[in-house]
Length: 460
Ligand SMILES: Cc1cc2nc3c(=O)[nH]c(=O)nc-3n(C[C@H](O)[C@H](O)[C@H](O)COP(=O)(O)OP(=O)(O)OC[C@H]3O[C@@H](n4cnc5c(N)ncnc54)[C@H](O)[C@@H]3O)c2cc1C
Image (cartoon, rainbow, N blue to C red; front, side):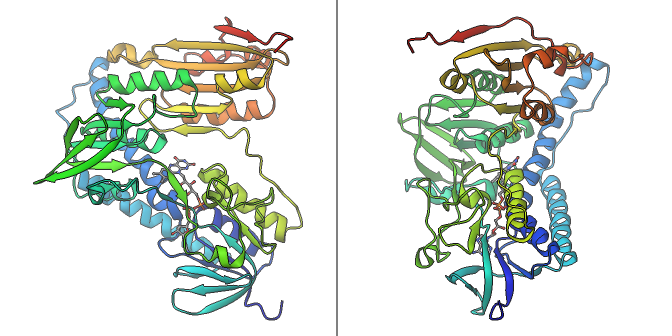
């Protein structure tokens, strides 16, 4: 220990790194953390938080329209993108300062430097200085996939730049079908841009329940978003101020901006992992055991860099579990099943547990309950939109194994459904729970008719 400058050196002050540093320090460890960009990481600086602020901004357009049916006269609203971006930046700066203050309060020494691993106990900073640490935690997150090397790739922006555009694009092409592509499509459409979403697969949101994918796709189309599946972007030509995007079927789309959101890569490049012997998993993330320990015993990794479940609460939980395990004397692993999640599309999506396809694959008997209905608020507003809810139930144990919601506040709803599902609630428990009326959520406890029931025969 004596030849170590610190007990723990954390690389990356994002969701996972900050939590791990603060908890480890609270247990009495001497902790340093290095951050090459801004404290708070992806979530705070260019992920969840700024994204949700833009989502709120985009949703006002419907609120203004819907108000008329409720008797309000709203003057023709106008929108000023630079005001939104400036206000968003001010809030992000406030949060960054709060994160920095937390690190200071917990006696974590912050180094505003890039850090790389030189050997199992040595970190080299971009200043050239070296720090000796007993334990190293890699929490370097992920980075947007730049896309294949097509002509005109230099004109493409990622989500990083989308948060800082000088003006709102009148027309934007977004390539990708994951949640980030879908959310940005809805943000730009809500703010008034003409949006085309281009996705190579057959439907958006691969990995989500098929009914949910279909429902959201049709809702997004209803809101004026063009969704082109089965194609990729093959080239982008700059013609004056415009960008002409060529697709794999040789058609073209003219727009002001082209954004790619085609996945994120774990941030492993140039960290010195190979020379120190930290192994990567097949998916490209750092391979770790259930306690986030890498192939080198004193080096750990948490968050997106391990490419397990790439969400902020998961990175935070992994960082906390690491500190409990290594410094708190409480070996703690993280349950990566039963992770509730939301897509902040318009309408919103909240899911937990198995999709129908997964349930049919994994269970001998599955009961499916579905409901599609017009939300009450849409009636007077005259808005053509529907909520969709689906429960998947293990036909043998009666446990609810999946819940999928598309509609207003689905993210808020799924947080609480998540508690019930994690506790092993049965369909009978849902049915016995009194409804809250009039809400959309009451549908979750009043679905009585099975939409369909699947069972495997003994031969299967
Ligand atoms: C547009 C977008 C929207 C998202 N929305 C959501 C959402 O709604 N909900 C949700 O749960 N998740 C969301 N996510 C995912 C979420 O942001 C990540 O899962 C989370 O931030 C991962 O935390 P982390 O600690 O692993 O890494 P990060 O938060 O990425 O932190 C890693 C930090 O390490 C720093 N770093 C990297 N290399 C080095 C180095 N060598 N030296 C020093 N510093 C280094 C980086 O600068 C960064 O600050 C979103 C992501 C994006 C991109």
